Image (tube, rainbow, N blue to C red; front, side, top):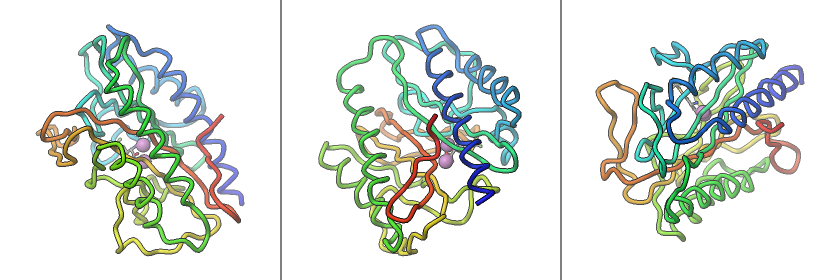
Length: 242
Ligand code: MF3
Ligand code: CO
Ligand code: CO
């Protein structure tokens, strides 16, 4: 119960910082400026930005533009009109992590990208709807995959949601596609993330030689949304909300 109270607080702060960072997004802003904001905000909240030095990650937030699937490293290049950018905020506060991300529009975005972003958010919510004690983890991915495929999109398989709490990434994996091996039953009190990455083209990915930046092989765009949730008596409570 105490851990859950602390997680509610960490997750609420992560959600606020994500909203505030997203409000800065406009053509000309650099992802380094997003990084500086998230770093300062995390410290001001009394926490620490979990990504910084996590397995050698060099910055305080992940910023993933267009064909970057996830783990984009902030740099000094300005965002351009028509881009989409995912901001992934994780804060370590009072001994626990809160992890949430969203994809934002940079200026005027083409309709096909807007549709991708809308459907990706719907995929996250459909995944959350599958959460219930006694149901297998694979029900989450099954819901997500079904919705993505109905819109002609693919689901990235190389990166999954994860158990979270006092540890950033526990061994519990949450695939966003149907994987019969993920037959662990959900239990009340489990805390994990759901964070589907949805691609306009193929889900095949590769990693830049910076060893972090994951991009689609076909360079088509992807979007992502993430919440940290807790399994309740009859469903899920989204923790990363204000
Ligand atoms: N926040 C990411 C996630 O959702 C993890 C980022 S790890 C980092 O799991 F090192 F790249 F920051
Ligand atoms: Co996560
Ligand atoms: Co995250």
